[in-house]
Length: 206
Image (cartoon, rainbow, N blue to C red):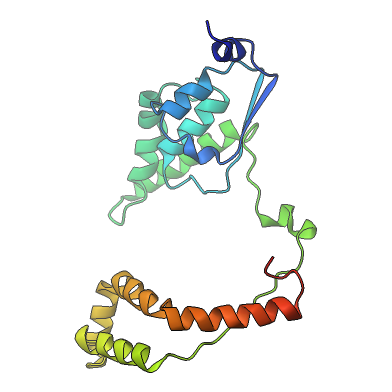
Protein backbone atom coordinates (compact mmCIF):
# COMPACT_ATOMS: atom_id res chain seq x y z
CA UNK A 1 0.00 0.00 0.00
CA UNK A 2 1.48 3.37 -0.99
CA UNK A 3 1.27 6.48 1.25
CA UNK A 4 -1.54 8.02 -0.82
CA UNK A 5 -3.74 4.95 -0.42
CA UNK A 6 -3.05 4.96 3.32
CA UNK A 7 -4.07 8.61 3.57
CA UNK A 8 -7.36 7.87 1.81
CA UNK A 9 -8.13 5.00 4.19
CA UNK A 10 -7.27 7.06 7.26
CA UNK A 11 -8.76 10.23 5.83
CA UNK A 12 -9.64 13.64 7.26
CA UNK A 13 -12.58 14.48 9.50
CA UNK A 14 -14.13 16.68 6.80
CA UNK A 15 -13.77 16.91 3.02
CA UNK A 16 -14.69 20.23 1.37
CA UNK A 17 -14.99 20.30 -2.44
CA UNK A 18 -15.21 23.69 -4.11
CA UNK A 19 -16.44 23.88 -7.73
CA UNK A 20 -18.34 20.69 -6.91
CA UNK A 21 -20.39 20.86 -10.10
CA UNK A 22 -17.45 18.95 -11.60
CA UNK A 23 -18.91 15.94 -9.79
CA UNK A 24 -21.63 15.46 -12.39
CA UNK A 25 -21.07 11.85 -13.36
CA UNK A 26 -21.03 8.96 -10.91
CA UNK A 27 -18.64 7.05 -13.18
CA UNK A 28 -16.15 9.87 -13.73
CA UNK A 29 -12.62 9.32 -12.43
CA UNK A 30 -12.70 12.43 -10.25
CA UNK A 31 -15.94 11.29 -8.62
CA UNK A 32 -14.63 7.79 -7.97
CA UNK A 33 -11.36 9.15 -6.54
CA UNK A 34 -13.14 11.53 -4.16
CA UNK A 35 -15.47 8.81 -2.95
CA UNK A 36 -12.47 6.73 -1.91
CA UNK A 37 -11.47 9.37 0.64
CA UNK A 38 -12.78 8.13 3.99
CA UNK A 39 -14.13 10.98 6.12
CA UNK A 40 -16.86 11.78 8.60
CA UNK A 41 -18.37 14.70 6.67
CA UNK A 42 -18.44 15.98 3.12
CA UNK A 43 -19.29 19.47 1.92
CA UNK A 44 -19.88 20.33 -1.73
CA UNK A 45 -19.79 23.99 -2.81
CA UNK A 46 -20.90 25.25 -6.20
CA UNK A 47 -22.05 28.51 -7.70
CA UNK A 48 -23.51 26.83 -10.78
CA UNK A 49 -27.26 26.18 -10.94
CA UNK A 50 -27.83 22.44 -11.33
CA UNK A 51 -31.61 22.26 -11.34
CA UNK A 52 -31.70 22.12 -15.13
CA UNK A 53 -29.90 18.77 -15.12
CA UNK A 54 -31.32 16.54 -12.41
CA UNK A 55 -28.79 13.74 -12.88
CA UNK A 56 -25.92 16.15 -12.27
CA UNK A 57 -27.78 17.33 -9.18
CA UNK A 58 -28.18 13.71 -8.10
CA UNK A 59 -24.44 13.08 -8.46
CA UNK A 60 -23.59 15.95 -6.12
CA UNK A 61 -26.13 14.86 -3.53
CA UNK A 62 -24.97 11.26 -3.80
CA UNK A 63 -21.40 12.38 -3.16
CA UNK A 64 -22.38 14.22 0.02
CA UNK A 65 -24.79 11.52 1.28
CA UNK A 66 -24.18 8.40 -0.71
CA UNK A 67 -27.29 6.31 -1.26
CA UNK A 68 -29.68 8.88 0.23
CA UNK A 69 -31.61 9.20 -3.04
CA UNK A 70 -31.18 5.56 -3.97
CA UNK A 71 -29.44 4.36 -7.09
CA UNK A 72 -29.27 6.51 -10.23
CA UNK A 73 -31.86 4.21 -11.82
CA UNK A 74 -34.24 4.69 -8.87
CA UNK A 75 -33.72 8.46 -8.90
CA UNK A 76 -34.37 8.61 -12.63
CA UNK A 77 -37.67 6.74 -12.31
CA UNK A 78 -38.85 8.50 -9.17
CA UNK A 79 -37.81 12.09 -9.85
CA UNK A 80 -36.03 12.84 -13.12
CA UNK A 81 -38.52 11.36 -15.58
CA UNK A 82 -41.70 12.68 -13.87
CA UNK A 83 -40.22 16.16 -13.40
CA UNK A 84 -38.93 16.44 -16.96
CA UNK A 85 -42.19 15.08 -18.38
CA UNK A 86 -44.02 18.06 -16.93
CA UNK A 87 -41.70 20.67 -18.43
CA UNK A 88 -42.58 20.26 -22.11
CA UNK A 89 -44.86 22.58 -24.07
CA UNK A 90 -47.16 19.64 -24.82
CA UNK A 91 -47.22 18.32 -21.25
CA UNK A 92 -50.69 17.49 -19.98
CA UNK A 93 -52.24 18.90 -16.82
CA UNK A 94 -51.58 15.56 -15.10
CA UNK A 95 -47.91 15.68 -16.15
CA UNK A 96 -47.54 19.15 -14.67
CA UNK A 97 -49.31 18.11 -11.47
CA UNK A 98 -47.02 15.10 -11.02
CA UNK A 99 -43.99 17.28 -11.78
CA UNK A 100 -44.94 19.73 -9.04
CA UNK A 101 -45.56 16.92 -6.56
CA UNK A 102 -42.22 15.20 -7.22
CA UNK A 103 -40.35 18.52 -7.16
CA UNK A 104 -41.87 19.30 -3.77
CA UNK A 105 -41.02 15.85 -2.41
CA UNK A 106 -37.42 16.18 -3.60
CA UNK A 107 -37.10 19.63 -2.08
CA UNK A 108 -38.46 18.44 1.27
CA UNK A 109 -36.09 15.48 1.35
CA UNK A 110 -33.03 17.60 0.66
CA UNK A 111 -33.75 20.77 2.63
CA UNK A 112 -32.09 19.33 5.73
CA UNK A 113 -28.61 19.39 4.20
CA UNK A 114 -28.86 21.26 0.89
CA UNK A 115 -28.58 25.01 1.42
CA UNK A 116 -29.50 27.34 -1.43
CA UNK A 117 -28.04 30.82 -1.04
CA UNK A 118 -28.04 33.83 -3.34
CA UNK A 119 -25.79 36.87 -3.53
CA UNK A 120 -27.53 38.54 -0.59
CA UNK A 121 -25.51 36.32 1.77
CA UNK A 122 -22.23 38.06 0.87
CA UNK A 123 -23.59 41.35 -0.45
CA UNK A 124 -22.69 43.29 2.71
CA UNK A 125 -19.11 41.98 2.63
CA UNK A 126 -18.42 42.93 -1.01
CA UNK A 127 -17.10 46.35 -2.05
CA UNK A 128 -19.30 48.53 -4.26
CA UNK A 129 -19.24 47.51 -7.91
CA UNK A 130 -17.60 50.01 -10.25
CA UNK A 131 -18.05 49.73 -14.02
CA UNK A 132 -15.72 51.56 -16.41
CA UNK A 133 -17.04 51.91 -19.98
CA UNK A 134 -14.44 52.78 -22.61
CA UNK A 135 -15.63 53.68 -26.11
CA UNK A 136 -13.11 53.17 -28.91
CA UNK A 137 -13.75 54.41 -32.44
CA UNK A 138 -13.33 51.97 -35.31
CA UNK A 139 -10.29 52.45 -37.51
CA UNK A 140 -10.93 52.95 -41.26
CA UNK A 141 -10.04 49.30 -41.89
CA UNK A 142 -12.32 48.10 -39.10
CA UNK A 143 -15.16 50.25 -40.39
CA UNK A 144 -14.71 48.81 -43.88
CA UNK A 145 -14.69 45.24 -42.56
CA UNK A 146 -17.74 45.93 -40.43
CA UNK A 147 -19.72 47.33 -43.36
CA UNK A 148 -18.68 44.41 -45.59
CA UNK A 149 -19.80 41.97 -42.90
CA UNK A 150 -23.23 43.59 -42.70
CA UNK A 151 -23.61 43.58 -46.48
CA UNK A 152 -22.50 39.97 -46.97
CA UNK A 153 -24.73 38.59 -44.20
CA UNK A 154 -27.78 40.62 -45.18
CA UNK A 155 -28.04 42.82 -42.10
CA UNK A 156 -28.41 45.90 -44.27
CA UNK A 157 -31.37 44.49 -46.20
CA UNK A 158 -35.04 44.84 -45.31
CA UNK A 159 -35.95 44.68 -41.63
CA UNK A 160 -37.85 41.37 -41.68
CA UNK A 161 -35.13 39.54 -43.59
CA UNK A 162 -32.45 41.09 -41.40
CA UNK A 163 -34.15 39.95 -38.21
CA UNK A 164 -34.43 36.38 -39.46
CA UNK A 165 -30.76 36.27 -40.44
CA UNK A 166 -29.67 37.88 -37.20
CA UNK A 167 -31.48 35.25 -35.14
CA UNK A 168 -29.97 32.44 -37.17
CA UNK A 169 -26.35 33.64 -37.18
CA UNK A 170 -26.10 35.74 -34.03
CA UNK A 171 -23.25 33.85 -32.36
CA UNK A 172 -21.29 33.39 -35.58
CA UNK A 173 -21.68 37.10 -36.26
CA UNK A 174 -20.62 37.99 -32.74
CA UNK A 175 -17.43 35.94 -33.06
CA UNK A 176 -16.58 37.53 -36.40
CA UNK A 177 -17.17 41.05 -35.06
CA UNK A 178 -15.20 40.29 -31.90
CA UNK A 179 -12.15 39.53 -34.03
CA UNK A 180 -12.41 42.97 -35.62
CA UNK A 181 -12.80 44.58 -32.21
CA UNK A 182 -9.60 42.97 -30.91
CA UNK A 183 -7.34 43.93 -33.81
CA UNK A 184 -3.94 45.32 -32.99
CA UNK A 185 -4.82 48.99 -33.48
CA UNK A 186 -7.88 48.72 -31.25
CA UNK A 187 -5.91 46.80 -28.63
CA UNK A 188 -3.17 49.45 -28.64
CA UNK A 189 -5.72 52.18 -28.00
CA UNK A 190 -7.21 50.17 -25.15
CA UNK A 191 -3.77 49.65 -23.60
CA UNK A 192 -3.16 53.39 -23.75
CA UNK A 193 -6.45 54.12 -22.02
CA UNK A 194 -5.77 51.39 -19.45
CA UNK A 195 -2.34 52.85 -18.73
CA UNK A 196 -3.82 56.29 -18.09
CA UNK A 197 -6.47 54.77 -15.83
CA UNK A 198 -3.78 52.96 -13.90
CA UNK A 199 -1.96 56.23 -13.31
CA UNK A 200 -5.12 58.02 -12.25
CA UNK A 201 -6.53 55.18 -10.14
CA UNK A 202 -3.63 53.57 -8.34
CA UNK A 203 -4.02 49.83 -8.07
CA UNK A 204 -7.21 49.69 -10.16
CA UNK A 205 -5.76 47.33 -12.78
CA UNK A 206 -3.06 45.72 -10.65
